[in-house]
Image 1 (cartoon, rainbow, N blue to C red):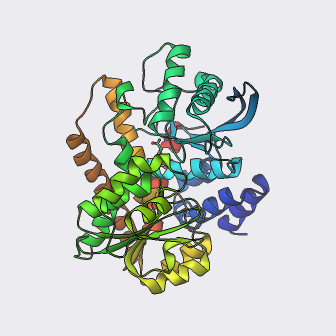
Image 2: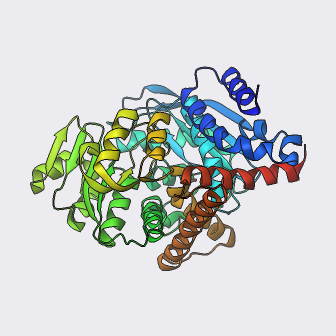
Image 3: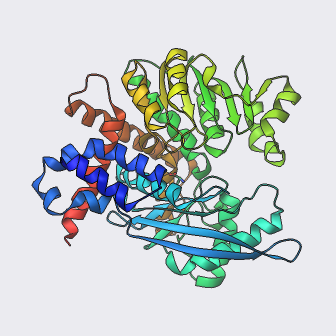
Length: 445
Ligand code: GLU
């Protein structure tokens, strides 16, 4: 059996029924096993199995009081994947379907993403099966407080620095940081993505979405093109999707869609600044902000449909994992002219990803294209450690530079692997892997 075959069967044996984790780990193995085979140090230090395994998983119960005075119980986890490159670092997701397989895949992907940033960031991911939809403000605050009571002993600016993710933004992180201050009595950067009033960084909320568009700009630039005048399909309607739409619009692109779990919003003439401002502010109060906007401003909202049957130049999936399957990817190949750039983590199934890679389209994975969020989290950690603030303009410039560096590194690695057209998936996996692997070898065993 080859090293790749041995590794895949070892992964399957050790992670039964964890489909999402296996999907992301197998994809990475395809690209990194040849690198391991060619490096005696990596083989001697069993780098492969060490990178494919988390350091530890904390599993805890969050008991909190609802508005009726009744104690509710939720499950929660923190996957601390690797601290070889810095403190464990990654977001916190609240979602009723969250499970350990999803968190393990997210923490694993985070390892490569964070390595690509060249910052001092290890990797992790956490969250709970708590569903904030339909909950009152007080319930969300009490849940966040109880979540922090369970986790605060395991985090810290040099240990593990959680941030936000789906359904966790600066408001929730503010509640968590308040509880951290009461319990740990240490004003430090143990969380990132905090409200600016609590030591958060300018631009953190916009960073993932803006970073995706900066990455798109770099991809276009390397084909002697500019984003101005291109049409863009975006799925999702959360923080990443809305800020990607905003930056695309600012740079002269036409944003034709957004979507949520119930349907797609279509703006044939392109979304305007007013539409996006409304979604970022007022929309938060609505149960279906996209449908409300469509009704209010005469746009189209199609129930139970996605953006992927529309025609455009660029597709930016920003919803959630595995939203695009093989059949949808085939439609995308017909409907788009330039490429697909992932704003979400692993929005494509393996079949979809293979289809896009074989097609004429340019295709960039989330671990490279959506690194902007964790990059500004890294800047927030630096600002907290130095007890200072940087301006939005300074941070934006640094974010653009980092996204450009990641793009360049992926493109260079892809070229070194013999590709004519850039294979950003291969480039991102190998560049991230080498940085992690070198740190693991250097720390010995
Ligand atoms: N959840 C974000 C991600 O998927 C950000 C993580 C962070 O800022 O630590 O990269």
